[in-house]
Image (cartoon, rainbow, N blue to C red; front, side, top):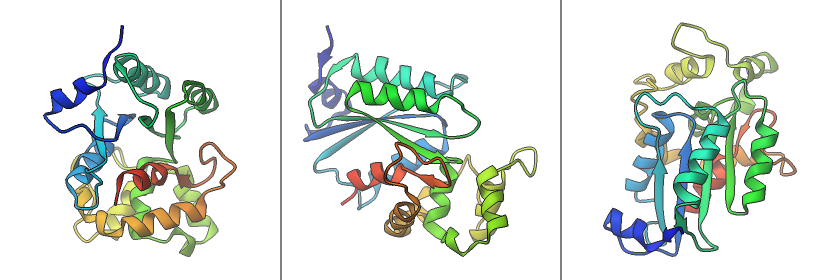
Length: 217
């Protein structure tokens, strides 16, 4: 039998909130740091929301969307009696995965599962904080969408972030606080790119904005 929802609050030493939002990540560093730091920011709506992150243990390389889905379902939904306002979110990239339609259907079937997919990657969501991609020409947008590796450790978008940010960009130390002052414009830009008829962006875009809108004041 699932445990009671209230146990999450007891374990985290916080008061019960109107809604629990549980996050599971494909990436194990950048995405988690972004949302952990957002919880500490004045914009986070901590009066209503308890944000719980599920991260993979060090050495766990199971990052495929289906593994993220199973982790979210097993460690969150099947563990606790969630209420109707509670939400469970998968934060994943397009990458080269071919089963996104399947994952989208699985989320719909669960009822309170949601997909925050970034195409091509989470760093594109970060890019929207500091750059209007509408200013780029078609060739540059194609390079962003393909997001090929330009060095052994950097993709095209990571290099682009490094060029646009004064102190560079390192995915292991992304310094998410510097993006938060521009969070509203990132949401606006993501909405401009969004085809509202799609369950996830099939072209350049990020549905992370849908989650962020829910958790900020």
